[in-house]
Length: 618
Image (tube, rainbow, N blue to C red; front, side, top):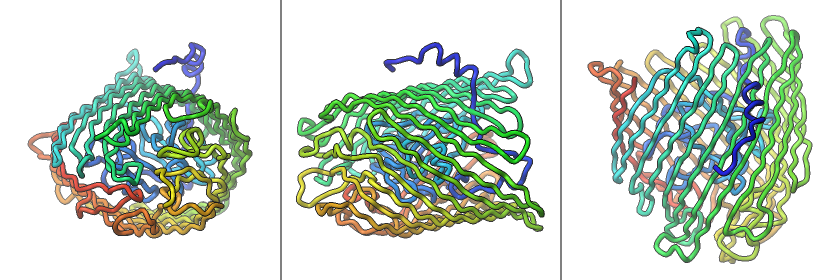
């Protein structure tokens, strides 16, 4: 951490606060939510091959498509609705955590998942309102309340897997007050293994902690986290049959304040400094062939909220400022810093109809700009009908239109355009997206069904492509692309069982405007058909079984070795002996059927991993 926020910023943060996306909980119609902003939709929450992180088990989440190198927690390209990793943002509180070098590192966030609530997946109008430089979707988290609790875990497995982790929190009343409390929370996590395939080893560690002041209408969190990750993988980024490695260090300091006031009104202020260091080695056997060093630092402050007076009108809003800089051994020009600005306003009108029906209109605009790129004004809006029928089933129908934009990262625009493994393109401009969507949902007491039909048009999307006549691993090229998709998600709870199922379909048409594109690593790497099925079964008080399954039929790609279809399974059995209160014994398996499917074309898929973990909780 080479910089510090000025004292005036701390003063502002200590007196301001947060936004809550939930509205009037007394109105049951407000519980009707779209598929894109629902809670966790996987059976498992803990990974098999390392300690838990914010991307753990997202590969089984029907709302996103996770394309990993080594494993999700090593290097995760999180995509939403057929976008690419650069189109997806990660939002903590009100702030999007930008990685200016490349979206490959956007998910490097050293926060223990216990410190955050379940992720919301923002698309369409919600992404246009709250996202930042993420034109397709945003994975959004809010800070959780600290409880007095903790756990310690020890794990072993095949491939010389070793894990140990401790997490604890304490919350105490402040000055004997029943309304105010002071909380402290911290964790340390470590894992290592030889990897599920040869030269797929890893060595991870993370330390994070926060202090929280919680009041009846406010919550303030001060956080610091640091993580170090080393991992290897054959053909990690290149198709040249070499054993590549990454050595990453990420630090994050963040201050967040939430404040609720009036009726259905709240706001949130978030600020952070994030530093990220990357040492990439093309060949671990001969590092001098090619290696690269990158160091980025990002500072940001963000505000979002909702203001509502007694009546049908409300205003949703957000704004964010980001300043970044990069030091790199591969950038060739003076484009090594940038300033980003965004402001969004989305007025809302809610009309109450007879028979417990409600009609909500939202329409607004977003302004994006940087000190190096053209500005963009984007429009968005939606109409939503909600009702509760005589059987107590919540129903909703909505139609929405949203525009969004973003600019490319430094790896895509700042390196060599004529030589090297990764060829940049200094002609890349601002990317724009138009998304139209129709959705329908039903929600009963123990079941829920959500559906969405969308069509998205991306202009100037930055993709990484491969040419059979080129010696580079990949080149940055803009593409105009149209995506049509269907999402279906259903959940059902029984007495001792919970079921989660989904189906997605996508189709694309693309135009690169050039002829020397033989394969796409990202924009055209998507599933035409994808099915997920998860289940949680508790036959006894001391026994719990969790299973996630994913089947996919992937779009053909000349770089992919093996099949274009795959079936993955994540299976966990947890035994909690009644004689030893607080002790859990977990036996887990990932990639149970030994699939070798290449999630990224030309990059070997992960192998099988089996682990046994002892966890004691208090």
